[in-house]
Image (cartoon, rainbow, N blue to C red; front, top):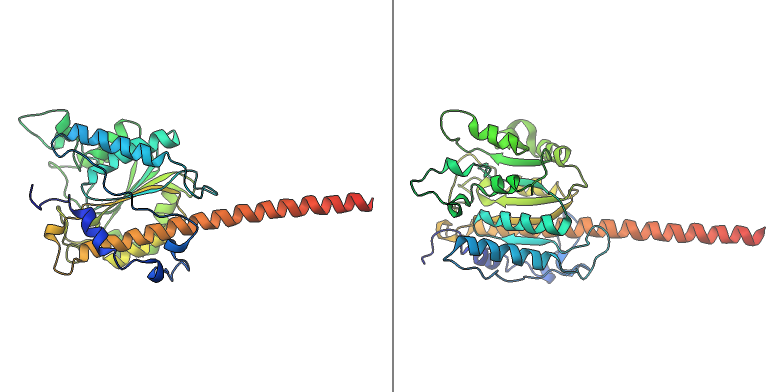
Length: 321
């Protein structure tokens, strides 16, 4: 097996994150260091999957996500009853086993916020082959179509952002299929009229603040001039600064799982800018998780303290009577 593809993406992102340490991890935009917070952040390592059987690999990933996501976190106050898994990739098809696990853990469909140049809701028949098989239906461009048909995705609460893909055939069939699956489409060009704030507002309005949400970031949402290390580059993408600002603005979302995928080191520049961007996105997601969680924890503690104070005051009044 050679170096092509995205299989070495996780290793590259880990290497690019080497400068993210406890003593140099304070995120000034949020006023906290996620690595010194009360939350425990662990690298769970790589899920051992077979490279010879895609169906078995899918099962192995699904079981691993379910096992990890079902464990009790060290700090389970607030909106953190379960661990939150940030997956590094790697092929984008990892989103399907993640959604299958989340569906079982949370007991229902999940909204998907999908940053990508491509739809990834394509019907498998859009990849014609003279040797069709059920296993070949599962690709990094069809996993959300499969997830939608399995009832894993919350219809009419999900969104794509950063799209600029070409469509199949001679018409709008891909968009029609996508609409049946309940996605809002935000195109890459929309940032020119809406700005980053307008895109943030559109996403928040679409998904809401309490809906359990899976965040999926394909690194090809960034322009290939800035992030060339990916397998399906599309010109005309957002800058890394624009994407990071949008991710920061979405902290209010109830994100219960996330991935950063399609980093292909073999195509990256000498400065490893694609892996560095992916590592920074991971840092921002962790910061937002910690920030949202601590805000909820503090609110819960304040409410409990206020209740205790009210009870105490009531007791004082009884004594006076």
